[in-house]
Image (tube, rainbow, N blue to C red; front, side, top):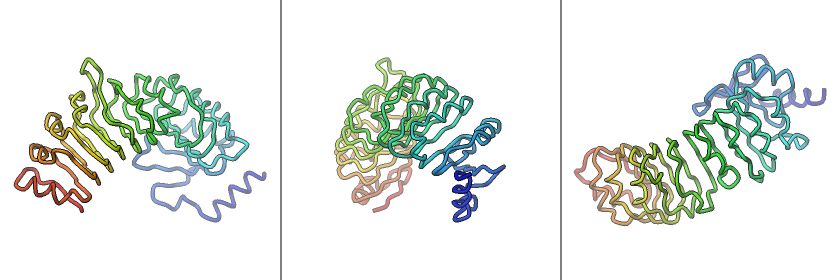
Length: 283
């Protein structure tokens, strides 16, 4: 009774169902955002009741929990969700290891600080993942994984990118200096984003023969710029980079649409005067 009353009071104070992308269906608050593979049942400062758990599974919804009450931060309640295909967990000091029991998951986001290292290899149907690198490295061993987004990539352990991965986003990756595809040259990577590296060598990217979209943001020093012309790039983002070695090499990029922001935008625009296609610049 107390739980129901708390949740009802929270809804009376501010009902998110009135916000864009949110709705209320059969008592569940649903979110349908551009990044959601399926409608997500949202629970804030609460966990689903037994009835709500059954309803989520029957209707094929995903589950997003944030602010889990202290008594449930071991996340053992997730053992009732076999059959779930999409899960998002946000919070601090949760035990994320029970997540590996939901072997039906296809989409997983673990934005949990202070979580223990979690073995995600049992999730053999997983196609997309987002979360911290240090505690979730095992996700790279899942053969079905196509899209991965990691934050706080402090270690230099990201070396060889799995051949089957199509999209990779590395945020807050100060120690990443290079990335390499598989040794047999069969890397499938199509899209790559690197954020806040201190020094990055673009020459290493030539091991990704299918790379068509690249975003490099807040990088202190970018070297190996000439190698970009050897990639099948169609989209490029150079966002707030502080120094780019061999910047003149950017004039060699054809059939590439790019966005350039920051203090180097004016210099790059001058180098590419008359080049096609025109790029977008914001200083």
